[in-house]
Image 1 (cartoon, rainbow, N blue to C red):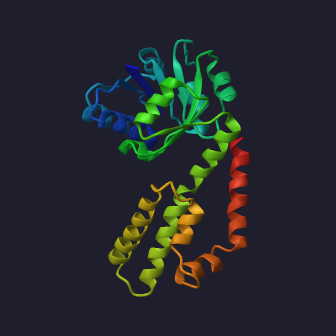
Image 2: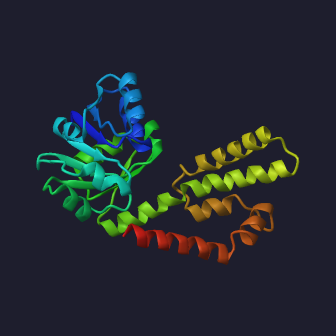
Length: 254
């Protein structure tokens, strides 16, 4: 794989480029669409062998692998009239856009693979779900932090729904910080402590010998503070509301 094109240079497009270019190894040439012009220009100035193309067709023509990263609602406008020959490999990172949908839009017989890269691919430490499994795509995302191929789009959509919980986690931490500030802690001190507290918890996730339930149990003592908050705040009603929100999102992604 010597030439990669990216159509739609937003946060994920930027992260992929950074992960590829800062790995230290010989990286492929990268061709960027003019969509997201400011980000594309910044990346081309920062990295050698990253170029901004005149239009999306030039991206396709100059690339072996084409990553489509436009917003779901913009796909028809961005991809209208695009010619994608059968010798290309297309990677679709648009949430909620299935293989049949994209194939109809592009009117191509080129191989299509879905993927869920997250911003952490910029540091090459995020596992990316792919469907269907494809050796070239798997190799790309394995380099960017790890790859998890799944058998079908039904399973893929479940993983896609899980990514919708990320900002809720950040908001949870922000709520904790605000609570501390309301009780007289300086904002900078509250922010610093909450970040450190959960960075430590995050590192424990690398221990895959213990299940997530076991990790939770290992951080609790009977009748202790952690057990009290978990059982009084994250109660059955709270859990049911989260499950329903995920079910509704999954239905939309289908």
